[in-house]
Length: 167
Image (cartoon, rainbow, N blue to C red; front, side, top):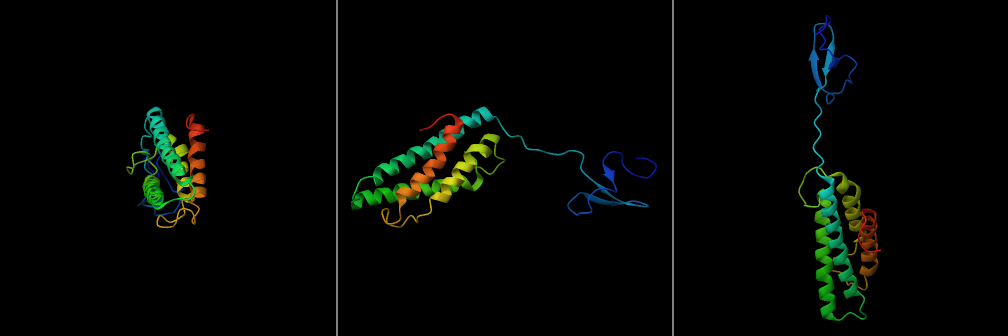
């Protein structure tokens, strides 16, 4: 503490006057805001391992979309093909929605790694935006092919940027 009663280096009357800025301490002559000296930042994890996991997860979604496109490409769809397409589409949409909830490959609520932030989360969120048709709608009337193609494009773009996947 110096002669004015301030803790050197961490307290100053110049801190913002916000209740969330720090802890308020009333001195003899001035009001001080004490900011924590240690800033905690969670560890981002090993990006090499994360890159392989992200690549594998995106390739899995890409494969499932390709499988669904193969089922939808037959014209006209009979009842068993429509049922199979609805099962594939509803499972894919549910898995992408749950993956986008936290944006992590393992689906656990934690801080995303740099690779997950840059590649996985944007690809999954972009794909989820494109998967608008309802799962109980007719595959041909609701244009599932267009929705799957646009979602697959987002996944493929991130896979290409990661250095793998289909062209």
